[in-house]
Length: 417
View 1 (tube, helix red, strand yellow):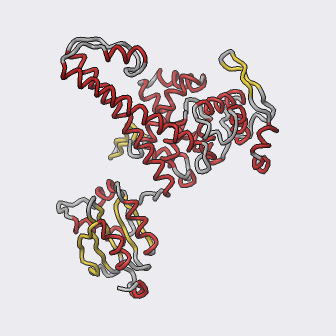
View 2: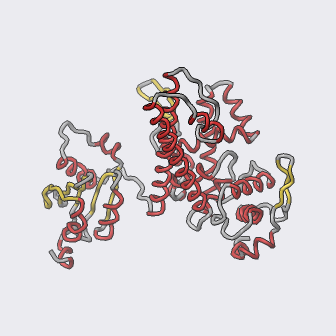
């Protein structure tokens, strides 16, 4: 079929059920008559099939899954509209005893025609790439933990107590290497040590890349507002930004809290109204990042600590930290939406936070600045510390570059003053 002839199709609704090796496709017209009988198309042939069979008047629906986005990118330029459905919510709406690929496609199409598809946000390519990097780091950390658990399990069988601290550093590494075990156990242990070291190297490389991304053109302008929060470091910042993507898609803090699954659940039936725990219906990495930031925040910030202690008088500590995490997320919504400085931190606190950021990144991420210039650059972007050139933290004086020195390197800041 020639590309120019596809305009004769009108009001077709196409459903795609995406699998690892094939896609089930089907279509109905506005009268719910089958115009494209459900069939399987091999994944490698799908781009050609889409080019030959889809029309600029078609509306297409597919569920979000691991390989959805490549399919989305293939068909989006060819059709009128593409809707990506939330699989769990689709299942709740259109649950059925009969489940086949063909039936799944037709159910998706009917939801599309009724305009009740529970849509998910389609992240741009750069957001997908950051999410993939965060997910990869998560898997590396889990792999590291699994290796260490296996090593400790081996010791437990022989009632041997391991020294405290990291396994693969300094004296601890030597201790593990000198253990007297059977030949087979010794082989296993040496291989575990090698794997652990390799995983740790990979994590360091990933962290360095995330550090460069935190100061880059795409994420740097947002990262500066997240990084100023007490307890938030580079990994937490980039995890938060990867999950949020564009803060403008959340019209209120409540929407963002719900997206993170940090909102309270409710049981409301008849005359019974009872609060429940958080919904956990949202991005789990965002919940993790906020809880991690909350724990770090109460250790480093007296105000957050006071709030946490007050909550602990009437809540379990784990419940109290979730409340702090929720409050941090609400604060982040305002900081990112209004692009403003964190009012609970003094200029010296913010300057030290910017310095801390500079210590965690490499020379490439500094973008040609010294660490003192980078700290001042962060302050100026927050509209703070114009005259600040020296702070005292931890009993030590620390230099911050003067404003003029940074403006000579970053003249675009003059436009933001």
